[in-house]
Amino acid sequence: MADLSRLTVFVGVDGGATKTLAVSADAKGNVIGVGESGPSNYHVVGLDGAVKNINESIRQSLAPLKREVADVVTLGLAGMDTRHDFEVFEREAVSRILGRRVFVRHDAEIALVGATRGEPGVMVIAGTGSVAGARNRRGEYARCGGWGYVVGDEGSAYFLGREALRAVLWAYDGRGEQTVLTEKVMEALNISSPDEIMRKVYVEKMSVHEIARLAPLVTEAARNG
Amino acid sequence: MADLSRLTVFVGVDGGATKTLAVSADAKGNVIGVGESGPSNYHVVGLDGAVKNINESIRQSLAPLKREVADVVTLGLAGMDTRHDFEVFEREAVSRILGRRVFVRHDAEIALVGATRGEPGVMVIAGTGSVAGARNRRGEYARCGGWGYVVGDEGSAYFLGREALRAVLWAYDGRGEQTVLTEKVMEALNISSPDEIMRKVYVEKMSVHEIARLAPLVTEAARNG
Image (cartoon, rainbow over all chains, first blue to last red; front, side):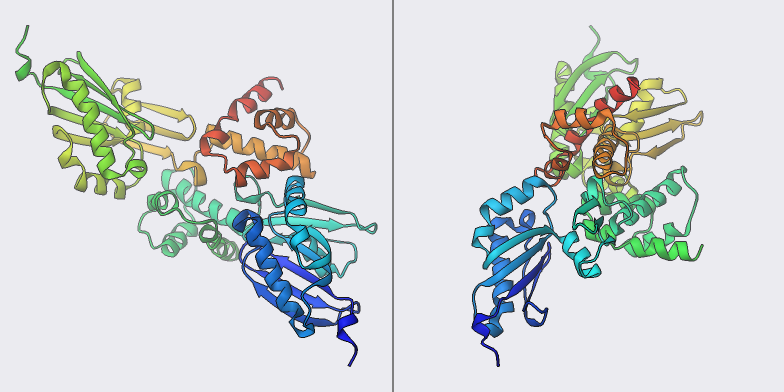
């Protein structure tokens, strides 16, 4: 067995609003270990919370080596949306991360590199939110979208769910055509009249995820014409 | 002077999320008094809070008569958006209102009747939100829109403000044309790059009213071509 203590260890971290995943590997890409911890979107858990969870996931991924610090850590973090975010994170958090060299990236960028294995390419992610990222041959990265559920995320599950609710209300107040969505949405929300959407959205304060969960009704309705 | 104690007194109440206004009058429409108190949208202040503020405004409007109870009270209340809202309010709040007979209406309906003086008509209200209401010759009322900032309020100030933010981000990430809105919005928000809209909207959590306040930038930009 090689002398693991002298191995150069790389850790990749995928940090989101729900959980953080870390994978450690050697320079050839052989996986050494994995780690998982809580959220590391600093807008959600704060800088201290993000550092704590990132380090916990790194520690777990390094456990097979009995080491506490990686040589190179690349963080792909949700919430790194503006230059300001990078400045804040790099100034106040990076020095506390368990890596000798630490790189901070937007989570869509690491997903793109993962999907293309570093080759030039374009990736569109449409989940609860939506964002597109691209890298060219010179390694330059650009993104488009990913501006969140209030002013962006066109085509995302939240966007589709919200437009489904709007379509049901338009059919109800006479501005839109009757569609199968009315019945499907009422069934999904367990309501008996479209105007009860108001109670669901504003009184019970449906979350972004709950609205996003209506998106399959739209794709199903579209599939059935 | 007539015997005021035997007068039949009508009170009209306009209750919103910010304040409640009451006006008392006799059967001929002569104004007796006015009252003003805090919010009476029950989604904002609860049923007890709504009753308390409505009664306070009624009391003030009746002060010139030294009476505590009106003969007829019509409440035009914000937040009465669904059948469920009317059921809840009529079951748990109406009996405590200081009127022998109490009618509950949506605030857009009383605004329409006020604007048309009871004649048939259509009214479109476009403020922070948007709603249209209409009454025909038989006194039947119908409304359209008014479904709130998440799934409705098309054409409202919030809607215009949100679309302005979206247009600035589209121009920034390459999906849209450069327009004068970019400069105007950055100036209004006191930011130096469009991506800082993210911080304003999601971290500092711009309110519906703050986003609505951007609407004049859109009308101004449109006026200047």
